[in-house]
Length: 234
Image (cartoon, rainbow, N blue to C red; front, side, top):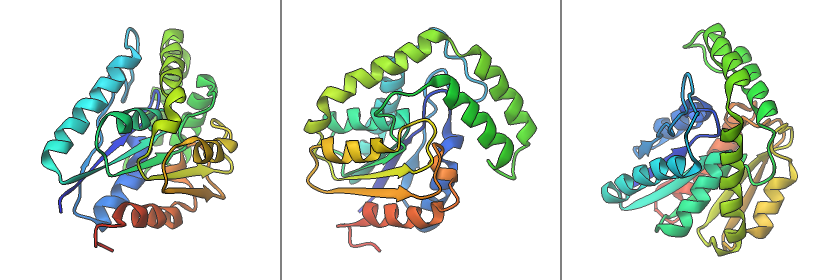
């Protein structure tokens, strides 16, 4: 059985936000993994004039490609990507849903950007120069258009009314030290989603960029077990 996984990054970010999780999946599976960069995002970002619909459409096109190539598809979304993943799960026959620090509650874009700066300067990856990332995100902190934040909040409002209609098996990962999404968001999603099979994983040391948490190796394995369940592969 050929498995495809679509991983969707967060607001103002890019694939780097989920890089450790992607590396873990590649090290432990032979799955086809797609990590698109949403319009206006990446390094450096240019969000001016980009709508929420453009972000959703890019993810939807990537999902359609995976559905054609795979026997089963899993959706995973980080932060705003979690909202898009939930939206897509309502429209397409996906096998599993993984929500990482899903932005189901109000987010302050300014605080989010400041957290990205700190993450990139302290611990992103040894393969890149932290100073290079810092300057990119220092720029982004001051130049993300207000309208882009409005588009993000509009996307949030599009998805919230339909939580109860989501029935895809779901695994929610929420960090206790998340400074962007309130910790209670994980429990809120767990209670609100209509899925019969639901799992809530708490990262004791996790901040918003949960894939870089000190305990990520522990919950990566739990999420992978969820993703592999019912496939006969362990």
